[in-house]
Image 1 (spheres, rainbow, N blue to C red):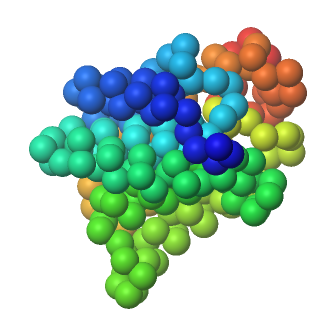
Image 2: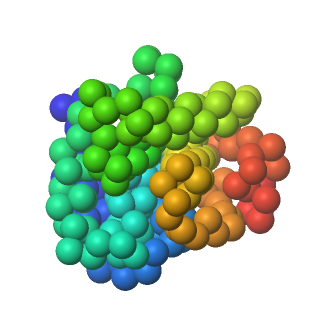
Length: 190
């Protein structure tokens, strides 16, 4: 069914996140992207983005909530359609980041402050993604989405989540990689 993340990909992400014990969402996103179950492009990046943020956050601040957070995120992100970036004009990984921020701050549509924070996160990510001149890259979008969500959470929520360096090693899998024009490809052979 279009828009549904394949079960094997959901399971791979859940298994890796459940076992992960650190609080570095970007490092975890990299691990997830390296797993053989995760394709170069695909809707699994919608959940991958949310799962990396939520796992790192839960490990640092509320370990007992990790599994519950991951289940909430999977329930929300499996509904994001495939190719949403071109069809609706917003990225699925960005929506995954918005999902994670929403879960962490317990946002709801009737709470102005939390709604504003979720919108700040997704707006800053969308602004970054709009600056790339190249076809879709789920890896680039996931990196930007995790990094953008961490920036807003660290600033607006006063938490301290690490924002580690990103080194994408997937350019060889993407026949239209923008190479050195991608801020995450600085160390890859592109």
